[in-house]
Length: 180
Length: 143
Image: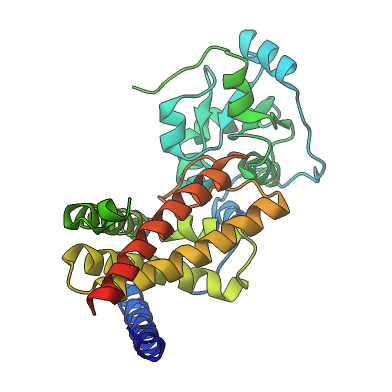
């Protein structure tokens, strides 16, 4: 095949691919309208969405002014779990929680905060100054920090973050729990 | 090797494998557009106003291209679209590695991010790109 023929095929394919892209956009917008909760065309960050959920949760007790993160180490976390010194919250998506989590931890996924909070509301709200430790998958995830901030805004005064998260817990070969 | 890559059964397997991967990956993302939008945002490449539109459109495009490839009737078109997409994904993944970002690639729905996930995704992507280039070359000869 000559080079000019290949060039002509490539340009014809490029136009068709562009057409397929436009078709995909139209189909995608149509499917999006059929969803129970269509995705807005403007992206909102995880933080903005989470704080939106916090605003929708009408809770007693105003927000605290806590802004600096309170971090705990793996060693401290081990003692907290062994001696049940705090309410431990797993902020990863529910599926990951079901596959394995720190013993006694409860699930409050960042990606479904509003519904998750309502599920565990009574457990949380009876004492807003109880020690709470949140964690997510690893140092690189932001879910624990975001949920800690949301809990601070909901009036919880003693929220700590186990930054190293689930991956450090697993690497240290510590006990795990699984949901049935 | 050349003989092997000219074997119609081998080509059929490559087509089915790549097409299947694209249909599967696209379908998973159609089901969870918000999570995919978060994945795209983590790459810090696209401007924010394009993130959700891309999260909605790309999975449908993947499904269409995957279906065309599996059908076996539009090999040249479908494989060139796969080459284009895989090349773009590879560039994005290389930029993630260079910038030292630890992200979940978002290739097959949500998974846990790890420092190696971009490397795994890049390796997978290079395999797909190679397969698509073989199909494209064969299709060009056929035409």
